[in-house]
Length: 102
Image (cartoon, rainbow, N blue to C red; front, side, top):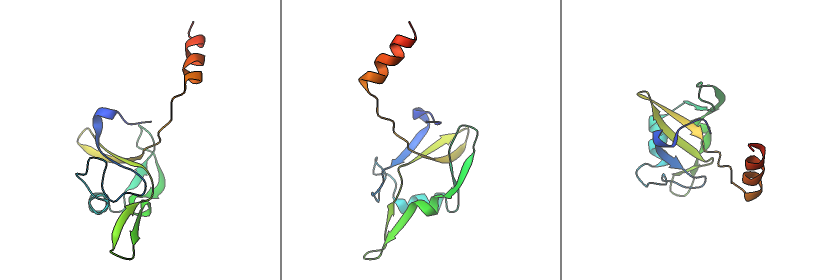
């Protein structure tokens, strides 16, 4: 994860219309980051995928749904969108790391 948790403004979970805090919608995300590319590291590197490509409109009510887990951050007066790559912790990995540092 290349962003800091204290810089997170909103998290969007795949399949939802609103952010996890219910403050922003996928439409807000489109308004703020129209053709902005997703940032993948702390150096501002992008992978060519835009925010627009991570939002799908449902035909019935024109509701916008997020197709990837995304995080919006504010860093040094700029805003960025990252993939929210959650890596699950496991006891075996924790034990392995603890054993390596002895």
